[in-house]
Image (cartoon, rainbow, N blue to C red; front, side, top):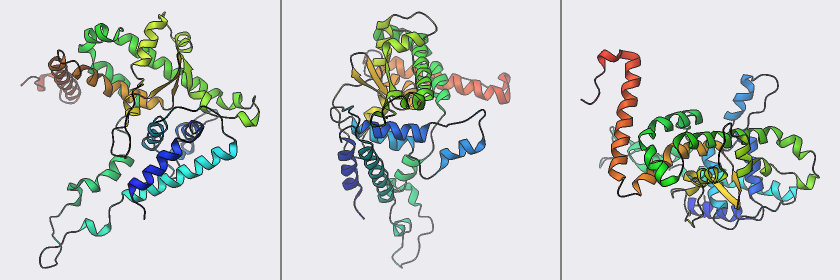
Length: 322
């Protein structure tokens, strides 16, 4: 069996192939989109739990690796895309297998060659890597969205002064981006059939512009404000991603800029997750606001916990700030 590092290097080379973004777009459509007719059936949902689909963490890894070099939007021949898809699935399967620790490491023998009864292999990181990476999501996307508003409501002044937009504006734009992407996903196949088969790609469904988002918004927004919000989740910095354990910058900055006012978002779930996670790191990078940000996090945790407990035990039996 090859080492995890060897497999990861091969995957990185593949992800930097000409036009590989189109393979990522295919995976996103195949594995993240639930196709239904007039009504949703349980069979439609169960397809999402098959072993033949990629998890979001796997797709995020592909995105992070593909963005290590200059982006190439050229549409490869469909035979080439098929090779990308098959090779990717093969490497990801091999990568998964390489993460499983040896069976003998799950047991520990004492000096008498007897099993140590209280030995717990899950106290070792090597046994936790695989279930963490391949485990289920921490929350639904709408939970990240709704909790973010509560989590950062006390930081609105900082956001306005340092980012140039309000929390309401932030959430309205993020929701508009998601809604726009859903519209494009629904039109992906009909639009594709209008083209020559050599130009078929799912990537167009993931590309959006600032102007499209402005048109999608229900209230009036300045283009500059919308651009600021979008680019809060764009990273143009060079970054390192040489092992599965490395921080994948495309999780924190899931929007990819391709032209001045055009962007790619492969997974809207990642945008909502970043909405929940990333602002905290904006705050702590400001040394003058760091302590206040930490205070606000504690305030949010206590208030949210108290509100949830009150639903069960009533207000009179819940004592905050004790």
